[in-house]
Image (tube, rainbow, N blue to C red; front, side, top):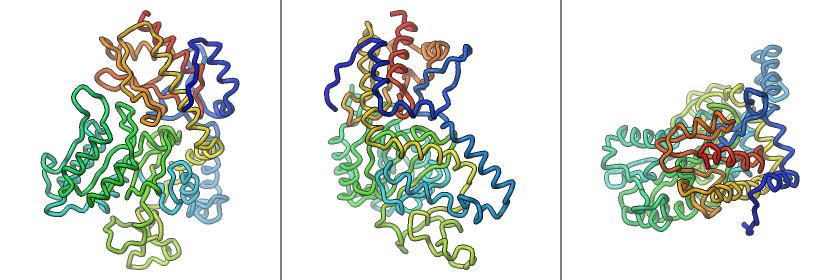
Length: 425
């Protein structure tokens, strides 16, 4: 990104918002209110995105379809429930950089991770290890541990956890690649996060995928903190699978339906094991109720149950806004907005603050993970009392994530001023 001359001033932040080409998206989201009715400074897109204003009306529309058509809603609704999920694959295509046929929307993230490992973790006597980053989101660690145990493998033996060098916060790409080379004959699956939830580090997914395949392993990624946040090119990078949720940067509601990617080279493979259910059956013959499963010719083959329509409705509102904004404009604003947050934090007259997240914009998304020396949760609680919602992670990290589709430069400026007040600087 070109060098920007930032200013530590409210007038500067307001001027940036006036010239922001995405500013008109902000009023299309609901912001929580403070006791006095003013909007909360909401900087928690890394945990739960805000509700699009259109979501409630779309939900009411589907409730009306249910009321008026009942079961006929599957076929006679304006947006038939039978094919409701298919539009999401097309809408997500430019967001995750994949062919629509490689994308399906189903279940929740950890469920999808398990379903993907059924197909892509196939341990043998000599090649059975799984690689994750040390400090991965706990659900990923639980999932891979349980997969190892399911196959009769002790996680102490079968799990390789990659950790930064002594005194460093981030994994170096060269260290990841060297670790894969070192264990090349024993690794069955490389399964990292796209972005580490705690530090905010974005991994070099292209290089890791290439190396993983060179050593004969399958490669998958958990993109929970990456989808809708950083540039993704899943098809071109060639990973075998990926999973993600939509309730963070993609603003689709708490516990919302999740997504999965399966590279096209794995579609229509007869030799690939998979847990099967009727909604993964080829849709042209699904309702003929055949006794033998015929997989759909796309990633929908990994679906098991029919689509939970009411859980999917908010995605229509959010993805329509995302596609109208476009990933190029969103990413350009995100880089500038996050850099402005970093600039303001560095202006604070204290040596107590340390930013864990990488400085290079290519190695991060919208999140900055902030450590404050000598602070505990009470600092975070003070921020909340003063109208700022971020995210607290034990033992001492505050995650602040300005989402470009609805956050402003003024949000970022005021948040840092409130932090300064809470720290009595």
